[in-house]
Image (tube, rainbow, N blue to C red; front, top):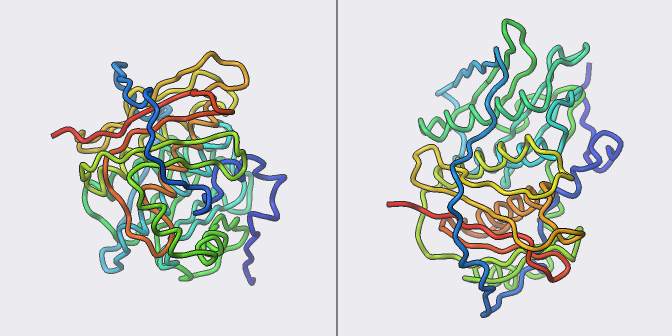
Length: 328
């Protein structure tokens, strides 16, 4: 039977929160500046925090095909984009449709499949997040940029599987395509030169295109960080955030760490609460904005793997801040 894909724009009833947490940031939302809020110099002495502890019986069986190589950055992009979608969903909710994301040059895709594929799904969001987390660590730690099949189990029961593979190798049924690269291309086409200059700024401010009251101010520190360390740091941070409800307040991540332990991302809350408060939805959004625009960047621009400090404001009021640092 011929398979089909359902575009994400046609599925507001299935994933009502995806829009607020995964749409790309337009180049026009970034403006260089020379001023820098004092709260970005704050320190955070909280204790370490790691990704959620797997539920009893959870396991992931990874099978790499070393004869089929994938581009490292494409693998990183696919993993974080899928995790960005998953972290907006309720932690114990069930996924009944397959999800697909594509890398920026469309050479690689990542597909998450519930099991059984045509029956009553047993794949909960938490299993998908933890499976993706384990797959990402195995890839980065072992430099295993190959086609990967990862079967997810709870006890002896298979609940789903992940596939990293070359794009368009096959067509699946009931796939939700969450690739937003066409919109990203359109934003760059408007003014490529301006976009390149602005995203390469050493400091600046990014506004959320879905909520212009939400702003992220950043400053690069110029200290280079390995790509796999930045990837596993964001992997740890988003997997940690995924466990929390979007509307819960006082969101912060004491220490999301790279697999090597050499890089740490910490965030903390500021402000007096009320409408301008740090919810988990805003913290998740901030991490995705940093990854999409500042770290990986828009198509056609060189990635930037460095440490940075950042501040978060809502309606002009500081609600949070953070740092990503490399420790020698």
